[in-house]
Structures are given as C-alpha cells and as structure tokens.
Image 1 (cartoon, one colour):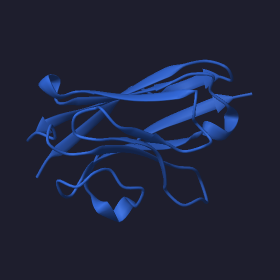
Image 2 (image 1 turned 180 degrees about the vertical axis):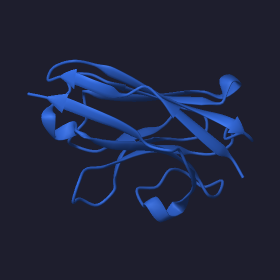
Image 3 (image 1 turned 90 degrees about the vertical axis):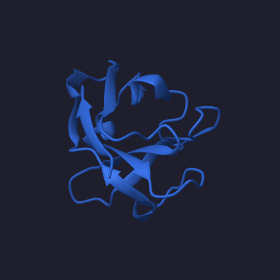
Length: 125
C-alpha cells in the first residue's frame, strides 16, 4: 500500500499563499488519480481538488476555483497544492489521498485508499 507523507501548511494571513506537498514514501501513485481533501472543525471532510494520473485533467471545488492549483510530478511521486488568496474559511486540516483503483478522480473520500497524515492550514483575518 502507498504511504503518503505531507509537508507545508501553517499559519498565514488572509490573502497569503501556501504550498502543500504530498510524496509517496513507500510505493508509487503515478498510475492513480490523486485528491486533496480538507476537514474543518465540526464539518465533514470535503474534496478540495483532484487530478487524474497524467495531470491532464483536474477538478476543483467551487469555493477554491481560481485560487488553488493542483499539480503532480510522477517522476518524483509528488503531488502539490498551491493555495493563493487564502481566506479564513480555508482554515482546515488538509489531506492528500490516492485513488483506490485505476479509475479517474472522485469526489467521495471512500474512493481513496491511502491518506497522508494531514496538515493544518490556518488563515487569520
């Protein structure tokens, strides 16, 4: 099973930027779709963005469109989440995840098999 390790995140003022990284420390996810999810206190985990195995197709939650960008480097077994123009409502724990099968990306967390450890992102107003 793929093991994912996240880095990045932290505290930033509204309007600022952060970049999250997710690398496979064991195994590879180059043939699988990847997703970034987030979970705020008292809320359900939600899909932020996802990318297909090639990087040629992406999807974004309406709340982050135009501000966030997902990308991947399969040679480095790494997926990135660039977050710009951050807002206080973006505050959450962010998780990367790898799709269970060779199908395309999905918005359902149950369709993802391996998860990163989670990274706190806090945006102050």
